[in-house]
Image (cartoon, rainbow, N blue to C red; front, side, top):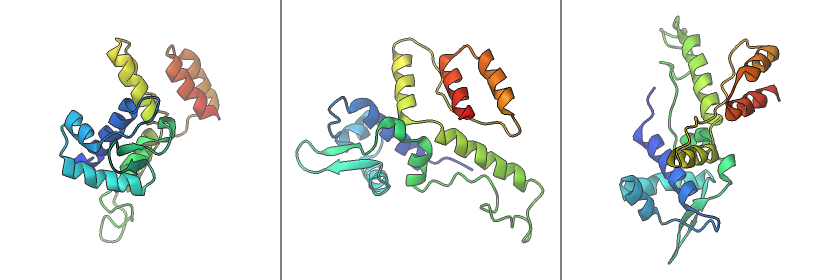
Length: 181
């Protein structure tokens, strides 16, 4: 499994738009994103074509044109962005088919499938909004981690409540509360 530049650049560019759109949600010229993030404009155009087809961005042509988020930043997860650019995050050797070893699942197949589930849950728990908040807090000197809900296999609701009560970070408390619903 490897996250390629396509997936990394897609997330970076979407975060750039989320951070630079402002209250008016004005379209951001893709050339500005490419320049700020040091990404090839041609490569970024290919990525944004996929993001537009996935309904994550809207484009405006002509003077003052560019791209804007099609949804609120809190509705766009990192998983959706990576999926939109057809990034393959599968950690199994067989692509999840269970045919790793001559038509049968290898000894560690379930381990890699479980890792796929953890990665998917993590990326679906991180939104553009949480990354924007983390970036603003970092700039202002507040250290904050990006909240991501990663349920632990076999953890009971009581165990999660106990862990929640131990948490001193309000963001961590909020993430733990989301597990209970």
